[in-house]
Length: 461
Image 1 (cartoon, rainbow, N blue to C red):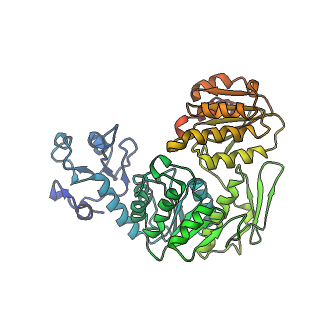
Image 2: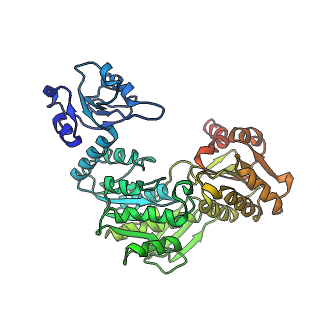
Image 3: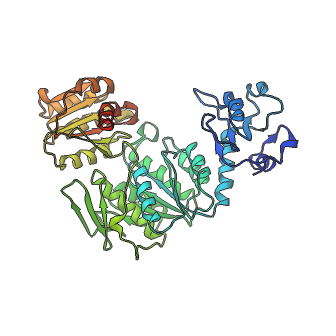
């Protein structure tokens, strides 16, 4: 795109009009990794201001930069530097992303929910890629009002089907995301007690998620979890028809069979198609069902595909299994809320291990006024399983620790640490060959610290 067109799209002004024929290819907001020929967008932030790095971005090959005309830092940039001046650079980035979205004639899938968004995105992409070579999914965790535009910029022009993860934490954000991505098809994996500090209740979470559909337009198709009663009830308020997936309740897509294997994997058969899942947890079956429902709703078919050969992967720290020195770690500490902890404990309770089963649980964050109650419930639940050792980490998890002791856990096998580093230091000698260790907590607690030394050991073998 030429800079003159960029200025028109963003409502900006090219500081040097004679530079209007310059063309850029690609967009970046990080001056450290910007590629030659790309456009740099300077975004102001709470800790860093992108305007401080415009000169660096241009030195590293950026064709031009978008900057806010009200920024005091603009005056310090060389007068001949190619700048498009706008009122708000974030708004300009969104407008440019929407323009590129319309240029790429792809069918867009929006995936949201309280749990399983990223893994469902990856599974859906794997299923679609088995029959469509020009499939794309948003990279990493680019799912919010800043990440979604970047996810669209990364979409190849030849993309036919795009799978975009969409996440929020504040009321009204989902409607804004809908305007950016404008999905043709939406899947909601589930709703639970997440971001209650901002959204108030599980019903509030459901309404915010469903606003993705209502804000996208009447032709946007909806796929939801039939086993999530709150989600189904809220969906019926806005739609008479939608596609469902589930295990317990009647739904459009249900598994013919679910069979746990001796190696810890699970074989799932849906409409006669066999899938082999190595991901941890029964909740992964729901993620597969969501992806399968999306695949079929798109009108796709596995008629010539051996589905048992499709490989499913998840992003790091989302049910990742690590074997190191005879110890098996189930690393599920990217996110945590009451629903995901319940599912995780249930799955680990059925996990087969040659040695002990050890559970490490960290704080669940952003739960609002009922955070203490939720953590006490977590402690009681953990105590109800026959785990060898329970470890709780974080200030709120002190409540879970006390509740576990009250529920019958012994002081000899139940521990609490104020933070992840203390936990890593004190539990380093605890694990033995044959043990299985489940690590679950909110990202802000940093429980990956407990596993990092074992990952290093594995790499040096």
